[in-house]
Length: 137
Image 1 (cartoon, rainbow, N blue to C red):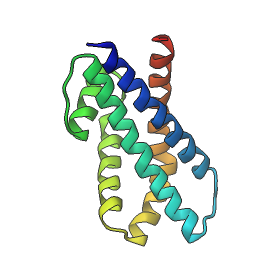
Image 2: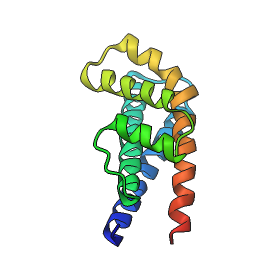
Image 3: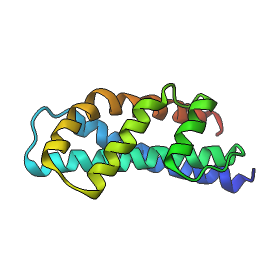
């Protein structure tokens, strides 16, 4: 693939890095005001979106043309970028539910998932992609 495609996934990763770091900080809090809680949910949505799109762009650079989040998750699993697709698919479902309808009870249930499952999952792929980016410099 062209150098432009490599640049694209690295640019996307840089955006993912910003979103991931913001989510990481948001997850450190134990108690939230309503506005802070909404911020936590939004940070998760953005970080997840940036993660799968970064994977999609990296996969394209490597010769795989995936279009959907599910396809990107599956191919990333096959390539070893993610170790278990199930939490990713759960996160995709959570993101879809939270993005299209705000239900406070669902959002509150998602807080524990974000902190205990989704953040570690995103951290794992963040570290792998960071190492991949840094080794290509």
